[in-house]
Image 1 (tube, rainbow, N blue to C red):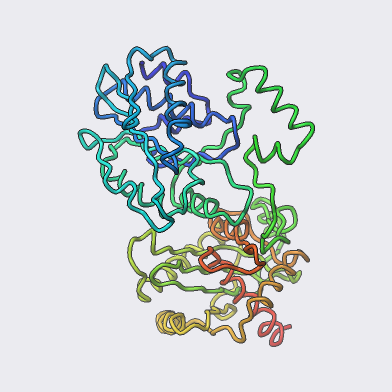
Image 2: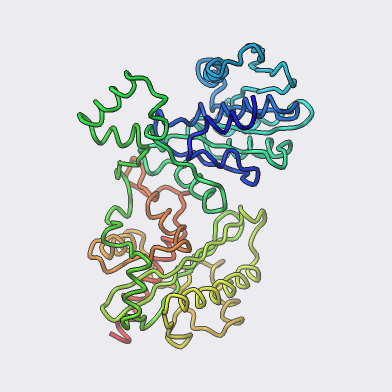
Length: 446
């Protein structure tokens, strides 16, 4: 199967699968969107090109392999008219290209328990070479740690032009770990592919199209979730009052207002720090003449992305670098920031954060303060109310992506409590910044 023949069968949204410079891909879409068939078509083409192009094709549970990815891969090979060039085995689950000898290994990544991360530890492909590592229905893994463990194994063997592919249907529960985990991957450089049945419409049979159209007419909400992959449920969302229409400011609209003299009077930087596992976040809130607070930019430093803990000196260095870049970014929009004498840096009152605050103050000389009298319920209510009233707004720029991700995924659990372990670092930074605005800035300057 030639490279041209493969390319001709790849729907336009999936072009990154053929780009040798793209290493990690997140395929996030609804059902009947072409994810599995397209991934398998590319895998077949690579296997037929060279022996070293082995494929590791996985699902969460090993017990699902035969009725899902194994059968699907076989069907794709047959649809391409290439079954005479492949041999399939059930024990272990494998497919071998008889022309080149390249293999597709079918596996499960979940361990026997939620804490068992060793299911993929011993995997070694022939010639210690992989062209593709694919996880289908990736959101069904017991936790993101199982994906991370499997990816660690795959990376040992992945070729320079190899692909790591996570395909999944977004869960309706916004608190599901997949939303945050894959969202972070895209923020860190993974390519997101979104597709719907429209992209493969010509390949669908009449019965499938009728089924989709019937659901679109009779159950629009289910249709949006099922076939468009939209996150339609707001159940449990903490900042449910945030609305794109009301609270998200398009950059072109903001620039126009700035050009007409709309400039910040004061800037408050909320700081939430991490050391070993948690990221450090800084959110810059500008106070404008009309009384609105606009989040202008977000700093987000994740120790997991760096691979080691974050000493205070390193965090301070990165915060200072970001601060300079922030001023440059705002200047490019025409914003004249008020300068350090009209700014405040508000840190968490935790002991570990106090060390960071003092080191930051010693380095910069800026005004710093630890937040007073924290209250989870009161601080959350303040954010909810600020978004509902339209007083709190967020500038729609790439630098605010971590903030927008957390706003859209931070959820209560089934007991209506906020569970530990969720990504809420920018939200905590927002609590500190807005607390200073309400209880200090307004009293002193209002």
